[in-house]
Length: 106
Image (cartoon, rainbow, N blue to C red; front, side, top):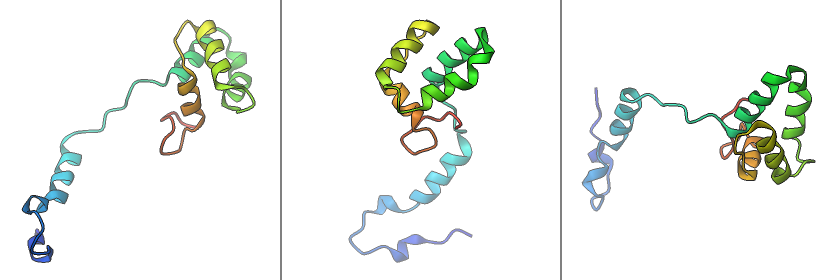
């Protein structure tokens, strides 16, 4: 049973708010959330690690560490992988798991 929310609205409320929650619920169920493009840092790392699997752990640790400047990390990854990586992407990748961070798993 759908409850009529108009009874709880103040008299001067715009009527177009009525049913807004249902609109969002319908959107959620009708359109699946699609993943975005792969992170540039992860793509570059995967490319490098595919050639030298033994570098996976130490390379990922260095990329994740703030001891290495993001701009330098981006330049090295871009040069070595052949994929364009920006300092912004490195900083976002380092914040993965946060609301403003990368979607990659930690």
